[in-house]
Length: 291
Image (cartoon, rainbow, N blue to C red; front, side, top):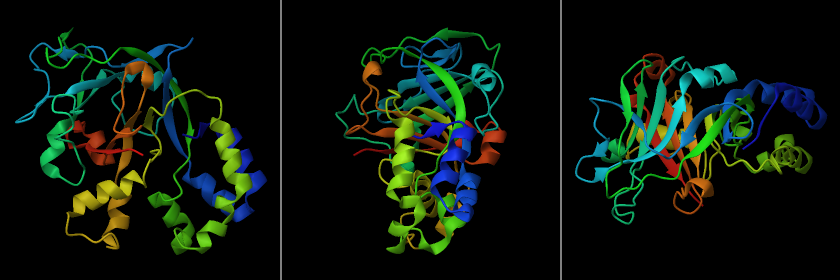
């Protein structure tokens, strides 16, 4: 999940790409925050454990299916102090992420972006600072995931090669046979990017920035779901719709938290910037991908 400083990424682009391609690629880099397993830095959130819910807020449920699992709690003030994530997040309070993860029914009912009826199975709540809360006991049939503290590390993120912005910047060659020979897909450039991640040891938890897809750009998946099941994947409206969504958070498979999403998959919450600015976290859309 390439995430590095501007200096490192700019230098890499100028060393391995023609000047015009380097400039366009650098223009696609987006600020984001890596959520890493806590080391020496201040804790900015955690996976698992019990969520601190307002006293009058019940545990989130998907009606007809059951309670959701608490996935993560993130401290907005600590995130703001860590640096720019590219999102108009609240500067205080806590973001809580919940997901119906299939533990109750063996995966019979799953949350899919393409099925709007499953949308209540993934929820994001913002608890304003100063709200009286308590660590809410988990439903007895749904034990909490192990608690794993997270630190926040700001940097720049790299788009997937099929992300909407890449097509907008580089044109129709993206995805074509000729695209394989493009400098962005050269062995030297892709190896240099991969080398930035080697040895980091961090799983792919992220707030803001570009999603790290497992099976194709997540923005296209959300856009297709918005247009409806009858929409063709060649529908020209997909381009516009895909660019309207930004990554809110992604939570990867994590052994320390006993979190396994399908076959080593990742959970994604995306949101439109206008809804984010208005604090309408209920309008976030969810997708998950696995190998």
